[in-house]
Length: 117
Image (cartoon, rainbow, N blue to C red; front, top):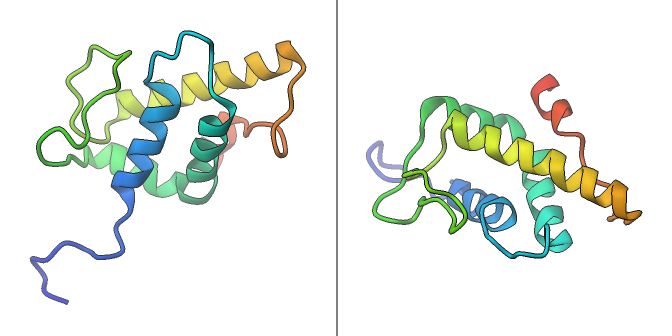
């Protein structure tokens, strides 16, 4: 592989889009369980990479990494602030699920376990 070429196995933009769709969109009716489950999958299997990208402030060209429509921030990719928004939203989605007595596949991931890994 060429040292200057992008990594063909870098799927981090898809992770960002999934987390943005789950936690940065104004749906008006709470969290979409399917989107939250997809975001949970990214956090479960790529949580350490998401943290690393956030610490490194990994950005994308143009509007690819922009914030969702419910955010006023000028994000262009991963950053600690955005990661904290996602973790807070995951916690809120978990509380909403418990309050309404709904259960997903296996319930929702405790966002504090992401940091403990």
